[in-house]
Length: 474
Image (cartoon, rainbow, N blue to C red):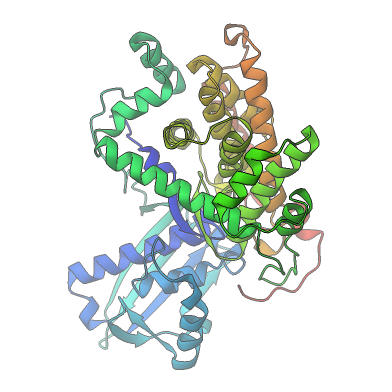
């Protein structure tokens, strides 16, 4: 059966710093909460215990996994909750030694003893495993195991199809070649095929409104990140740079609103180096917000959340892309291309290294920019292939388990590579390409399987062991 993935599955609003280590566990906690409510065990529960395994255990503190799980167990929605209240909730739990399940029922909970980090144990199915256990006063328990498989997707036990819609699409495709065949046979662009498929889930208006909401979150992340200074949390004492770059490029002009900034950008011309700096600034801004547990869009992950917004912001400011329909078109193509990496490889750094995050986001952005600049489906896929080809083998070795070094800068690099890949594809005949998008996806997956586990978001190798640090909690 064809696996159907909506563009709105690939692009999700969530909370930083990590889609697989923060948003995924948060959603797993919400799912567990729903399960014990339906089973009737919630009313009996007097205590909750959570076990983390593998990559989740090794880098969970730096990724705020424990805090995300706490928020989920309290019934907080990552899309709508007030992020300013998170620290207050943590302080209350630490003081009272209890949590409010579903924001209704107080049960015993101690951060120190009820979160168990099994750093030397991984579950067979996926490195990002976690088990919830609810206990009653007669020592009966109700347990469930989840896996956070990348991009905020979760699955229960080993059911890889969990959470995905089993739905019949007019143009089903499990590979880029199948998508290309649909485009060719029906004389449609990638975004037009996506439009037809998305109708299987919702109306055109609903899809467009949700995509514009996604862009609004991206846009806010860029603008707020460009106006925020200081140090990022977590103990590395990384200084934010986006604001300084922003002020230098804008010659210290102040903008009260995004619209004011947009007007300034439309009225001025910039050199090539300035445009590169602007793109880097856009990406840094988003991922500095992400590192501070801000609200971002998984694109396809939180660790790579800055690439697609940066390239889309480039398109809007420097390529006359400032219209709702062009923005929607861009996001449709990006989401569709990302789905093939999800289906045939991985978008989890714990499974594939950073090539599965920055590499995939760069490929998504390259394809989207190419179609929006007038490229054919073949050229869009060529751009995606070029972008991924030059991220193959990229490791994930975050210092201190934090999504900061080298993660934030990598978003700038991924965005620039996406623009260059699009430029190359638009200047090329895709019929002359020697490597297809499907082949590079297959190669990425083979590379992922061959990669040593210490380079897969464990902080056991690479840069992570070169920098001696003592980290605090998020």
